[in-house]
Image: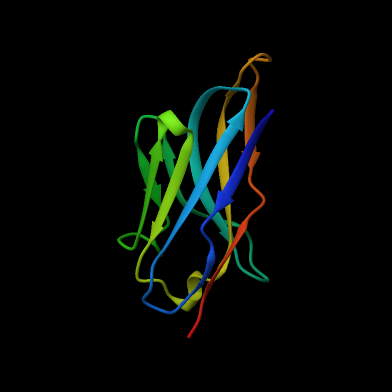
Length: 121
């Protein structure tokens, strides 16, 4: 079983920055990709950014140029550096990881519990 623990959310003023972290633990054989999604009240969950173990990244158009995703493979941890935050970035941010679990050698697609990001003056 693979678990994800997120940290780094909070309240920030428009134009400010936050850094989210998500650490994966448990029976991990491989992590093929990790990503961040967000869900605002009354809206569907949407992809924010995703990174593969090989370092390929993709971003939502709304965050490109402001957010940067990175992954420390040795620590099984993904980061999301968020700069120039806007009120419309307010949402619960969820971490996701996909790969192969050790022991069972089956695929996993796991979500974290979510961390609130609020951008407001």
